[in-house]
Image (cartoon, rainbow, N blue to C red; front, side, top):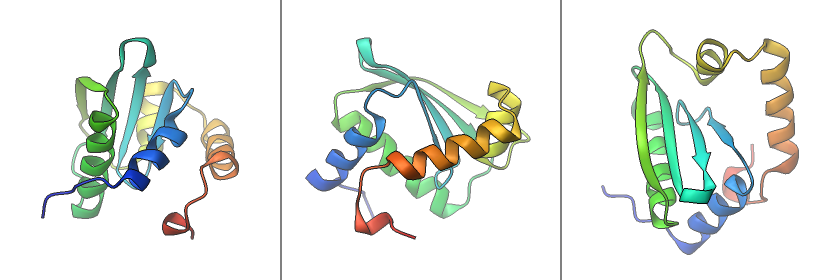
Length: 117
């Protein structure tokens, strides 16, 4: 089934990425680096995502494309099985930095009952 974003999906994505230089998406197994000035993004993905992660990756990228961004590069990170590993191995985040980022994300993410725990 082809994903077609709703205006609600696009609005949530736009609010979530606003002013971010990078965005880690554990549910999709990837990290996005933004070049907002040029409306471009680069993705770093885990090597073997499961079907759910693949669907979340596809829907997020589709949303970004619909918001006028272009994917400039995609890096498939061999030997990496989680977003935490991506952040450690490719961006040199410490465990503490990852934990702080997760807490900050929870505190600042746009409210949408579809994504409540």
